[in-house]
Amino acid sequence: MTSKTLHVDLGDRSYPIHIGPDLMTDSELLQTRIRGQQVMIVTNETIAPLYLAKMEQALVGKTVATVVLPDGEKFKNLETLNLVFDALLQQRFNRTVTLVALGGGVVGDMTGFAAACYQRGVDFVQVPTTLLSQVDSSVGGKTGVNHPQGKNMIGAFYQPRSVLIDTNTLRSLPDREFAAGMAEVIKYGLIADADFFAWLEANVSALMARDEDALQHAIAVSCETKAWVVAQDEREGGIRAILNLGHTFGHAIETATQYTSYLHGEAVAVGMLMAMDLSHRMGAVTLDDCQRTQRLIEACGLPTKSPEGMNIDQFMTLMSVDKKVLDGSLRLVLLEKLGKAYVGNEFSADALQDTLGAFCH
Image (cartoon, rainbow, N blue to C red):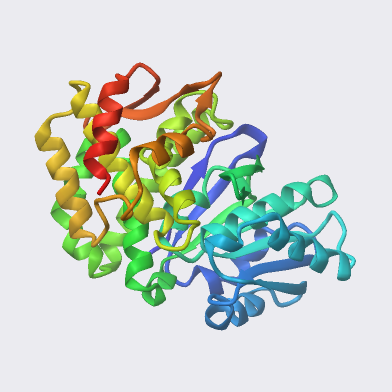
């Protein structure tokens, strides 16, 4: 397989996305994206034994240090972030340092936020190792940490120097993590590309079997879609919010369960079905669209219901602190039709209550 390069077009903040096998060991490719001598690799306890040595080898000739964080969404907080700053200061690294995020979405988000803050901004490179981070969180410059009262409430928009997607890392990804990543892949079909959604339906078996050609295509289309959206709206003042399809519902699920029982992609899968259901109740998408989406999500082994015991009031309370609440009004990403999303607050309160009731046990 040959690698593919896409571009996120943001003027002087533009950067490439490289997709293909063996990119993590491509020393020339990696080092062309690092401008200084100092490198801090940020990874976690799960990824370090698998890939840290390969990454260090690819950075031969640089002054390299590493910080290994605990693994899990529950550690995506200011306390853990401070471990990165501690390591940078202990090494006496200056503003020419490049941070390399080696891991999934949590590592990428925290590394990017650390890069945005350290000495008021240093370079960073994304090397995402999970499907979810490859198709979503590594692209677009959203960085940050969670607060006990809400997800991703503390952060910054800060673009990487490049994204290196080594598709070989998906071989070691646990089945549940892989399935969680598929939720974000499905999202792109729902919000912007009905043809891609149909392709996913036809190729879901190959994707779940981790066929390399199918995966590279799915990753490339996902990244192309995200890059197109981000290029139009870097700081989420408008169209970029469509990338949050299902996320307001999903974040409520994650917060309610304290990030312990649903992976991000699992919560988003349920949230997308809820968004589809509400869109149908509002007279937009068809019942067949909802059923097709549910079948595809089920084919990926993803959940389709909210957690046991989560009720309508809990959903409403947690959704009210979501970042997409504007001037006291809850905005949701809904579909006009399969393949076309919009953001708005013009939905029936009764329809929302009915949707929540349908997905609560």
